[in-house]
Image (cartoon, rainbow, N blue to C red; front, side, top):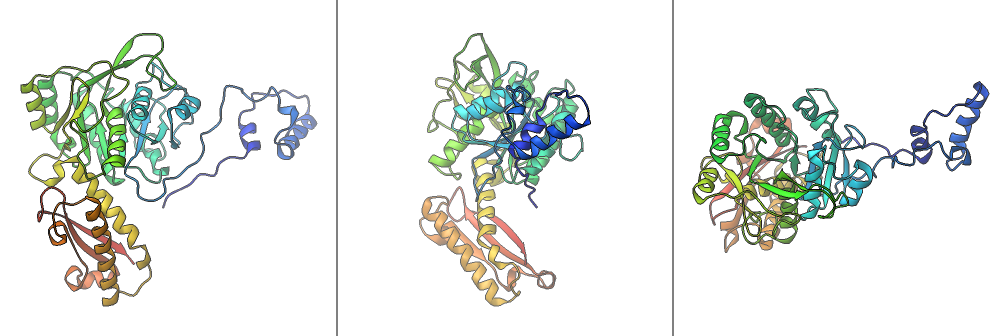
Length: 425
């Protein structure tokens, strides 16, 4: 169940930011406490509130089924620790987390996200840019585990994840993050470790870490972006030089743009996407290098202008889930169907229930097909849905588990990606 935090009142916020007011005697402290309780705008508080502390960001939740919401865990200049907040602009990140800071790699990815089409980003500040600090080390409510308080997101980023120099540690860290993304129905966007920037070395690392990396819930990007070192206000200017960062933050922003403009079912790559902004250059790749990375399921960047080239998950093999848009579409379809079947709670497990559940599912799939989500000139080549005696066992009926079996043609007409959706009545 999603846990929601109550926003602190003004008096609570003021009390939390008091900086050591010194009063003589118990009576003075009692008077100060009464003032806090009774007068949120009390003049006595003047000078006791830290003017540089903006408090906490507004408490928001994601309504409905949205595919363009991302989540990022990292270290930042300031901000609440281990408490995710949903931000809707770079200006909000500047206010509550201190903006772009050269000491914090993740802050550059936040800027790249908003610059490149991202609109909604859960941000959670970790205590340290170490695998344990970022992943939580098994401690509930810390690292990525703090995102348990974020009610929904589709993309997960931990830009500072590969801080360890040990190859094994990197693979384990990646596997842990990917597993968490999968548990939330999200996709993990990864950049190569900073020390693995040679294409041949990266392919060897991916193949050697296949046990932890091979997942339809993860995508890896090769190629770095040269971005301004300064410009915390979301701009691309500012004094100072430039630095190289991974592409995952910008890619997440472009995924959001692609979902709004073309639909989550459209591959988020190629020349149809806008060029990445806030970028001066990118690492060059030969054709042979690009092909070797593609074979390893690694997505690359194309120069002039800089664009994403490839939309593959790290799964590998011949599955349709080797493509990012198929995986994300499947997640979207499942979430929409579950939402359409919420009315089934408490209903009797009988044939009329099955007939209505199948009809509602078919109506939803028909709507998505009309929007262009599925391939096929006729409905029977684009999707199917079934909820009847054939989809339920006697154990399912006894346990009141409603099962809908469906399929959709994501790549070619008549070639269905199957889904089995179970709803507990």
